[in-house]
Image 1 (cartoon, rainbow, N blue to C red):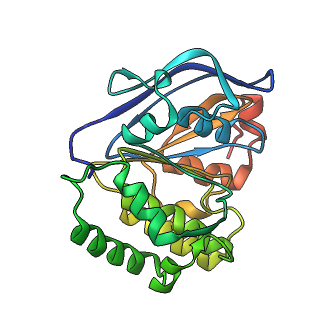
Image 2 (image 1 turned 30 degrees about the vertical axis):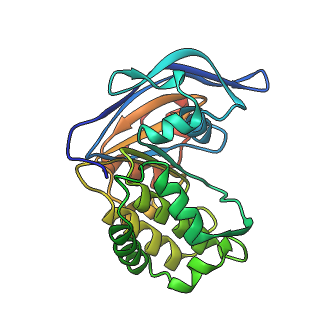
Length: 256
């Protein structure tokens, strides 16, 4: 389980390329446990690339920069070790896995962070039931193959359910609102908000301000052309929703 200790994820001058093409061009930011942040920006700005690079996807090659989790070199760790260290990524497009039940998947994921001595089956079951209630999910979903035949909203809820089960130190949610109707955005947003506590740092990647009505970030980062172009408080998200991203690209703040 995540603790109330203060943790930091420091990203400094991170450069990443995909297939030889530069995508991230010097991203620098710091995430802290107990803080909920939003990463916004237009399509193709590099938001998802940042998420995958931090998690260690082999397609995303780091060519420069450093990432440290509590002072330790995160980039030196393989993907499974990054997850065990407390990093979680909620996917924009969750995959279907036929033949693997959701309950088995969650238990296997839970055991990746525990040993036979530290695992608590009873507590796992109690928390799983509670999390299903938070998310408005029926327990019958646990018996079905992972994401197979699930609606878009159900798939995004499963990502949040994984986050709740694993209790990570840092959770990056890649566009949890994409492809969802208004009711599903509200449900997912409220569920994420319930998981916001002093022991976890959450970064929500999104294009739009709508999920931020329910997930209330303390800080907002704006990524443009592979770098963080602007940061501010929650009011920045509202300004972006009203005025778009062009003024950030041009580096000019428009008059009211």
